[in-house]
Every structure is written in C-alpha cells, then in structure tokens.
Image 1 (cartoon, rainbow, N blue to C red):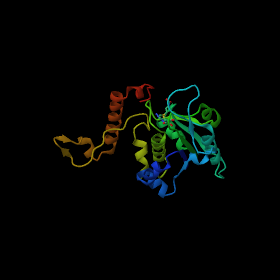
Image 2: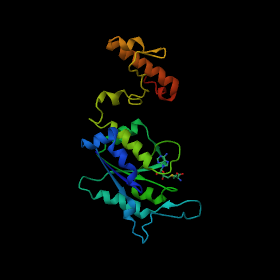
Image 3: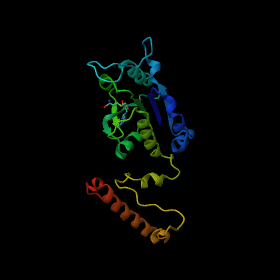
Length: 229
Ligand code: SAM
C-alpha cells in the first residue's frame, strides 16, 4: 500500500514513519509513506498557501491552487490515481469500519489542513472523501493523518507479528476487547482470573467472549444496539 501525505509540515512525520508497527511495515516494504510539502506547488511570488477569508473573519484559509495541484501531481504516477482524503472535523467520523475500507485501497492521498481550514472549492473540485478523527478541533490535519495511517497499517496483512492480534482488537467484531493479563499471577492482592491459567482453550475463549460482551454493554451500550452480539 502507498500513502501520500500532503502537508505544510512534512518533518512532523519523520519519527512516526520510522517507528513501531508503521516503521516495521515501511521497512518490510508493505507500506510506503511519502510526505510532500504542498507549498512547493504554490505559484504565487511569495509561495503563500493561504489568504484572508472573503467576507471577513479571523485567521487564514488554505487557497485552492497549491492544494489541488498537489493532489493532481500525484495522479500522474504510473501506479494509478490515489483515493483522495481530506482531513477535516467536518468529515465522516473515522471508525474501524472505515479503516477496514481504506486498508483495502492500494493508494491513498491525505490532505492535511491548517489555519482556519480549506477554501470550499478544494472540497468541490478534489472530490475527496472527508474524514474526521473525532468531534474536536486540532490545529492541523497531521496528527489526524497519523491516526488514520496507524489504524490502516495494523490491518495490512503481515504488518502485525500475529494476525490474530488485529482480529481480537476492540471494534474488529463490533465489541471492545476482553481484559488482558500478564505476569505476575498476583499483584497487590489482585489475581489473574483462574480460567486464564487453566490451559482449557475452549473455556478461555468462552470467558473472553462473555467478558467482551459485558465490557461493551457497560462501557459502550451503543455498540450493542444492532443486536448481533
Ligand atoms: N475552522 C475549521 C472548522 O471549524 O471546521 C477547523 C480548522 S482546524 C483549526 C485546521 C485543520 O486541522 C483542519 O483543516 C483539518 O485538516 C485539521 N483538523 C482539525 N480537527 C480535525 C479532526 N477532528 N479530524 C481531522 N482533521 C482535523
């Protein structure tokens, strides 16, 4: 999979792309992440990418030309056109279902906003899918892009040491994950549930399933609403 990130701050991604699961996926060739400073596409004298909003108001708005030219430059790649994504608090809220959809796309191009956001015509002319990572406002789309890249990478076959791990994760089957324990067996008076030490895989599976259901109905009853659990 290839992900191109269009940003004004490409250096923000350096450590992220080199570390942990994403770093391993990149090193093993499963994933390519290419970050581009879309200021390089600005055609005006000062290479500015933003301007004051028509109608007045605070802050600066990202102009159409640099952002759209940056998207279009990626289309020239012989590997085919990427699915365009605009990171914005006004987009559809990212969840595991959307992450699964995006993980099956061979190429993504993520546009990170800044300042007061985008000129509306970037939305109209790019045809990008608009994604939000939650109902709060960040200063820029970079951290949102990292969230999306991280979540998608976990689903690439071979990215995790153990494929079962992504299948057990919260939300993959619509439930939160069951409680996990590691050594020691007892800590400050709290013991590991006996069933996990039993070696009986059937019982362990049953216990985990019922714990996942209980935990989900306590913490996220909204996830139980479709009745399939
Ligand atoms: N004025 C904009 C609004 O109210 O919709 C918010 C602009 S925000 C300060 C700057 C940029 O951060 C946005 O263009 C977007 O790229 C990114 N951003 C902020 N919150 C986000 C969120 N919840 N999800 C995804 N991107 C977000």
